[in-house]
Length: 274
Image (cartoon, rainbow, N blue to C red; front, top):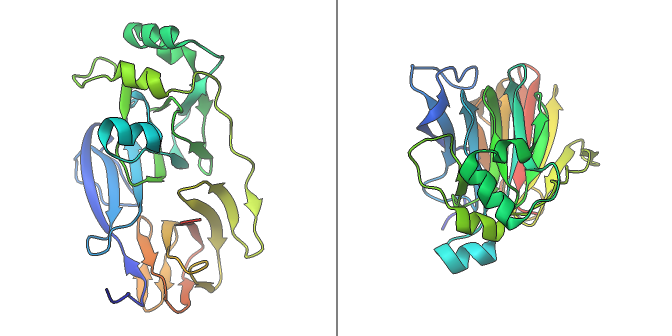
């Protein structure tokens, strides 16, 4: 396959969800639909990671993802490790990750059946700019009134523990098999790299950095891989093309330095394979 040599805007796919939001600006125009997720894809050359924006007006299910070993044995699919970067949070908005104190498998199942699992989770107040790393096995939930960018393994393997009475199946046995039955460990504080980017998360599946750009920046993929630039705010020019908020740009392997010239201060994430 001939490698592309110019930055490529990824295609966006809008998914309606019962818990989604009708207001999805300034990243996307709102048309009255309840959009829960926007997926970004390269149909011609699929990415090894899955990139999303998530919009919530209600709580999402309490869920957990398996690791690769369990997911391949049970579902013949990869596992799912992910991270969240918060873009907007209404007053009182919270994310849940892990438990306030250790529990047993039996307590997990009983609490899921009764709905008391919400009270056992560690609910974290969030604000724009917060980054959370959610490794496989972490029981978690996304609260209402949040917009976030999610970066994850290329997998949608999800086991639900509790869903507020919505008519969707639960996966209690498999959830109990894979759940980490204790507190979640917050990620380390962002580390300023030598190239001006702040390292937010690095794991076996992806690395993600943050940067605010006010002057020209050359965006060469690290090493011999690719990178994706995620435009959280601002606008300007990337190579010969215009960029705006809510876009993701793939800069393929072999691309000559793609010069980003902001017309307004620009907030970026970049993600790539470590």
